Length: 111
Image (cartoon, rainbow, N blue to C red; front, side, top):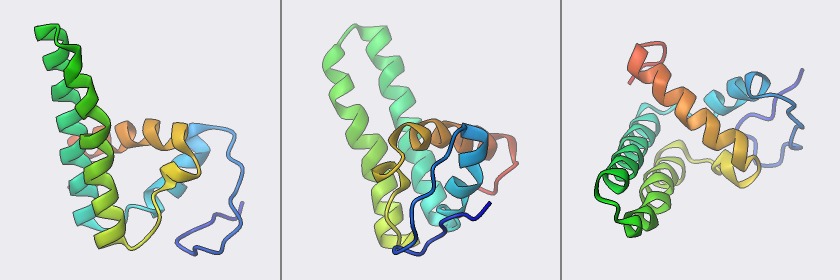
């Protein structure tokens, strides 16, 4: 199966599973700085969700996309020099962000 790597002109592939998409997702996150920014953003997202549950202040949820996408997009545009996969594959990208986060915690992927 051919994957669309960092080539901006590559024809987008149709993925049918998260398992199939994840290698492509990782190919878009080769920069350690980008991965670290994703890690920070995801940690803040989880903290905001926990704070919302603990406080009952649902206004905190407004900061979730800013934290999650803000750090990630800085990583992609400034360090990885590619377009975030979320623009083409929003649901798979969101899920894979949490898979990569777990893989960074467990040491499967370098932090």
